[in-house]
Amino acid sequence: MDMKWKKEHRYIVFKIDEGSRLVTVDKLGGPTEGYDDLTASLPTDDCRYAVFDFDFVTVDNCRKSKIFFIAWSPTASRIRAKILYATSKDGLRRALDGISYELQATDPTEMGFDVIRDIAK
Image 1: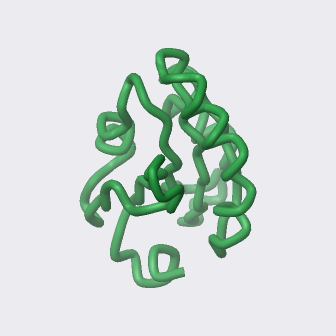
Image 2 (image 1 turned 180 degrees about the vertical axis):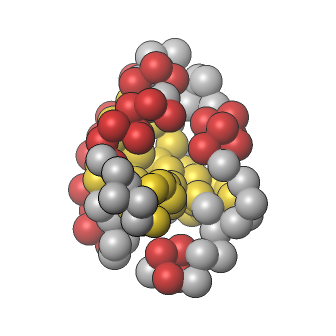
């Protein structure tokens, strides 16, 4: 909710520690960082969860903000990691308040800026 109301972070990337199986914060995006910074912070060979605060202007010229939950599971990641992230997703998703949309991606084209923009409209 701090992300939604206080705008302290533009995005948060979460990872699961395979040893303890705890979800921890991997990276916090500052308020000036954008969607390209988020996508650049996701590894190409490991899974992550991300929450992104997407600001946009509607056709009525109204400023809006929507929070996206992104489950990142690239094809190059290990099968064990994919299973761990898939089984843990619902628990984390329920713990996070204010999520407007959920997106699952296995490669960057599935979570491109155009995809996010089209979903938010």
